[in-house]
Image (cartoon, rainbow, N blue to C red):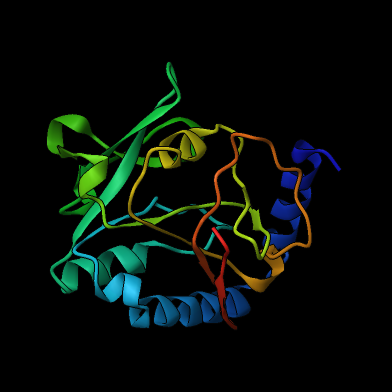
Length: 188
């Protein structure tokens, strides 16, 4: 199956999860994250603003604020497929951009250098237990992770864990994956 076909199939799988099950899974993954050493030992945490049917990250952002963490979110630059992370103090700093993604408005936000981010929560559609992921197709995170020195983690439903993925030389692994049922330590 091609990456494009896999993306389509995985989106259908995620959309088929009923609302009550979705909410329960998100809660269980959030609790696993908040108890993880990566979360507890990080002052600056990066994550994206989720859109359904992705794992909900909005509550994670609020929890980060409650704990006094520096929460940073990306702004994508399509012209060079790069991302700049900005500190998020409140949701009014956001605007809807292409693909209905919420991103920070640079004029209302402060850019943060990638090396100051201690925990990078990396989005994706599906993952292998070795830490490879299938993203949304832009290659933004693979470019960023190739030079990122901090901890990497993904949050996923069990339905997103697959046996194999087509892996290319530029694909970057995450160090851990948290699901509603387990923590997967990836060898990479």
